[in-house]
View 1 (cartoon, rainbow, N blue to C red):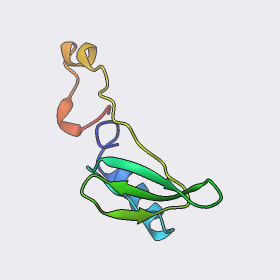
View 2 (spheres, rainbow, N blue to C red):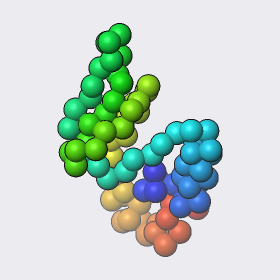
View 3 (cartoon, helix red, strand yellow):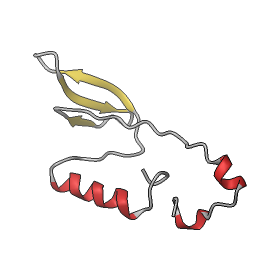
View 4 (cartoon, rainbow, N blue to C red):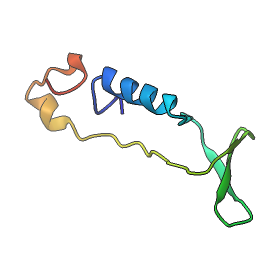
Amino acid sequence: MMRLFTPSLPTKYEELYHKNGVKFVKGVKIRSLEAGSDGRVAAVILENGSSIEADIIVIGMGAKPAVGLFERIGLNKTIGGIQ
């Protein structure tokens, strides 16, 4: 989210979610998902071998925004977003 918003906005949302029990795991790769006896997700197995119990999984895939047009017109990139 840092590429899309000023740094303070995603930090505030991450803190809010964390206070409500959401665990953020960043920069890791998923090896597999394990299902429980009911067929629903029960755990995430990471490439480093660690396991995280889970009821729900939200996977964020990064995307790089096309900003060439804004760079060509001289948009102020020092603020980290559109002013």
